[in-house]
Length: 151
Image (cartoon, rainbow, N blue to C red; front, side, top):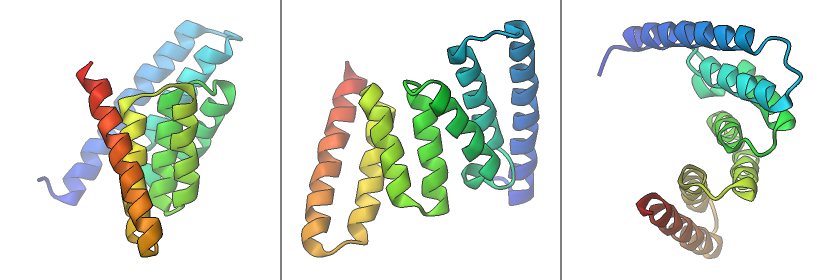
């Protein structure tokens, strides 16, 4: 592993490179009124913002990703990314809502894995009966994710 300062520098360099590519794509898209294109650009900007010092806890990333989801609710990657932001901040119920939002639009292995991991975390903080149900649901989602990845 690299020292934290080196990791941060590498993440900031990656962010700068990503933002340059996004700016280029935005200029190619021009003044497009296509909300799907603008949603994708906001999603990419939000993902790039997670490469800053605040990481997935970045308020900027959260705002950009929220715009992406509003412009195109079927953008499951944006739902997952904003769920990761909420999770990083400790707002587990909001994160859960985001992962469920992603799954409402598309059953993807990534969304299923995120929700499965989150449910296990929530289960550890719950009463025994609730924990058991949470772990069982988590396992079911993990199995579905594996089936999707295998096909």
